[in-house]
Length: 144
Image (cartoon, rainbow, N blue to C red; front, side, top):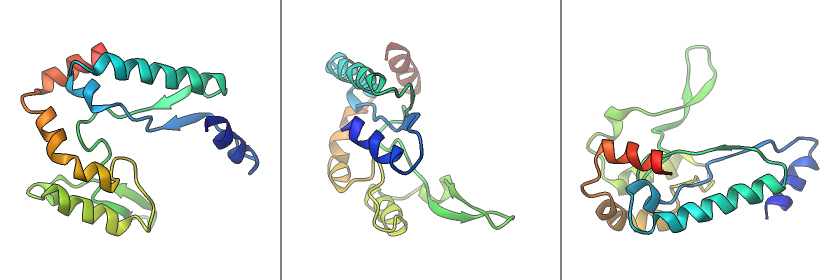
């Protein structure tokens, strides 16, 4: 799968040097008993990427919704477009409403972390993080 992606990029005259958003399983971020299993899986993914010549990997360690934006086409003062996150917009928003906001702007693309099945797991994810403090997250990142 990785090699096929790399070849499709190279066929367009580009080079695939890095991968963004190799997802970190919530068991790792929440520090559950299953985290070592998922860390092993992540390591294998890194090895697989390395075998294909990809040595740059970006990731997010944010819980539940690792990638959140409130505007996918925010117009800056110079007329350029960028992504925007505005905490005031989501302050009292339910996850379903946040999903609808993101989905309405995605132009049909499936955005990482915003798949419908992920939303359906929200209550389970919320329970997984119950009692996990900011300090716990930092320690779980160190462990990872």
